[in-house]
Length: 327
Image (cartoon, rainbow, N blue to C red; front, side, top):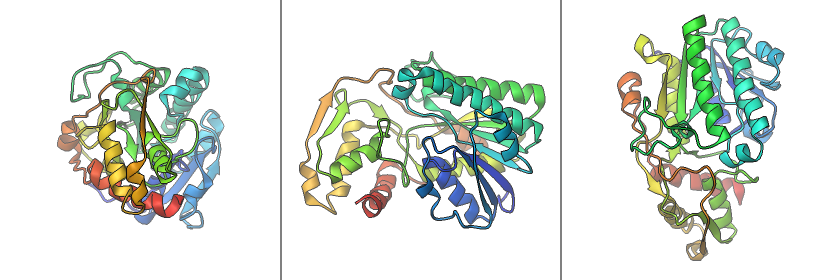
């Protein structure tokens, strides 16, 4: 693995949860980092720790605008494409906008990166691509039919990346993220991810609503494991490791009931009353898959991936961050 330092790296969606963590990390390694964001879902406060870094450049723009994309990739070595409209429920409510951002915007970035001759285009793919595939663990080469508009858009990203690699010669790597969590993840809004939403409710002594009976399970993946995968995707020199997709996960699964139990335990250190907050069970959510578990063998074999943080280890760190920053 080459050391990634003194390169120029464009991070789209760099004001978002994952993007801002990537910005911070690659700046700490001595790189120049360009952030392209329209602040539709990202936040300026996520940039607070490095906005004045002389090696950081913020470009306010929209990936749906091809000229914004072309402007952002000028002189760039690598692209880490994180910009997207996440959330299965959001895509069900508004499939047109989800498609515009996740497909048309993705294609714009891919086209701009190809024209600019960037060294490699690494993009956020999604575990939602596995759709109705029932086999566990999920293996990259075996997928099912998508269960939501969001899942369709993320699968189309993979298809476009493959075609661009074969047709235009740009190196691409897709990272199928599995339920990423950690510092800077937004607990507010209608489409907040489950972990920060639950944390905020528990801290406020509000009852938690779990969709279904709580036995649905996920491969919850701490943000630092995701940063490791992005760095490996940029730095690998193995020919067989590029122009493909990888599961980006820890390789274990926990139920939502397990998750709430851990959150109560770790938050109760700060506030004993949190242990008594009630849990309410509601209907299953449309488009949700029952169980998610990644095989990370491909990433281990081709990228030397070695995730450091289990759900419990990551939650302990994340809970401390939330308590310090959200109370």
